[in-house]
Length: 129
Image (tube, rainbow, N blue to C red; front, side, top):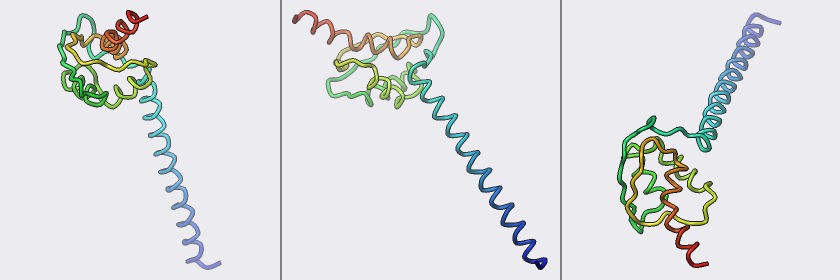
């Protein structure tokens, strides 16, 4: 085997190791990010500690979960509007957020905010039975 062949074989092996290391680094990094995001879906902490600050929001009839999430994020009630959309979808509620004015607090979890924004529909359903 000639010198060029040995150098070529060593270079090829080094490149394979480097590519494998980079791939493993990306897999590790994105696995951690996916786990963190998944954890936040079910365990997101409030933006502020008690007592927080009260914020009034106005939900229009035409607002969907994306619009509401963006509004909550802009007003400092949540950290991530997309995460809110997933949390709302997974909330298990068959009701939709109804139009109205809601008084929320930065010390509330998303689950507590959803309970408040979904409660008018649940009360109406209970009164019909």
